[in-house]
Image (tube, rainbow, N blue to C red; front, side, top):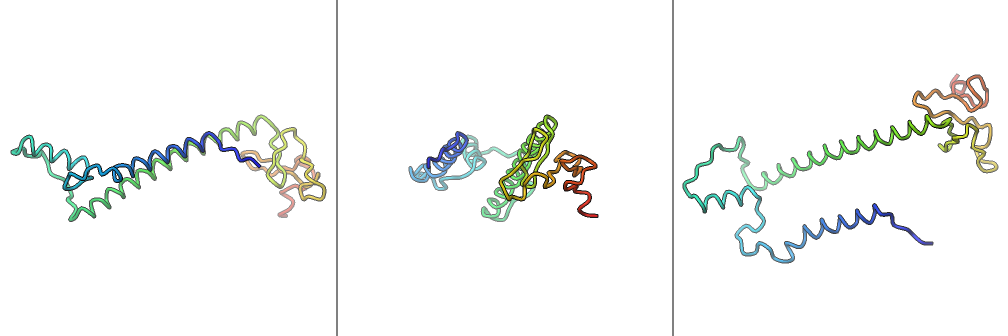
Length: 169
């Protein structure tokens, strides 16, 4: 049996490999070994460069909160990054869900939208015959999956073939 890898899977794998290389290569190649603190942030690098160029420079303002240690500062930065990533992931997930919902609604408007007990849709308006002896056999009461969730049976609003409303009564 041949397994075919999709284009998106290949792209995701390649991007993951690039991110891994960007994280590991500076450590492996020893970049920054000549520095006292090899991998400091951009703020610290800028402060060092300014101090070297103009030793008498006075900052215009001071931070509102100065963490007691570098570890706490790093933890706060990681928390900020995690919150930002969570907000972005929520936003993109919401957009994707709305787009998929709109596509399903448009597809449902295009056909009868009848589904059988297994969740399969028969766009022709009839019921799915299923396999012999299966619970999805004809007349098992396929229900309409529209936006209102009316629960109408395939037999119609007055039909007795598995009308969902009559099951609870």
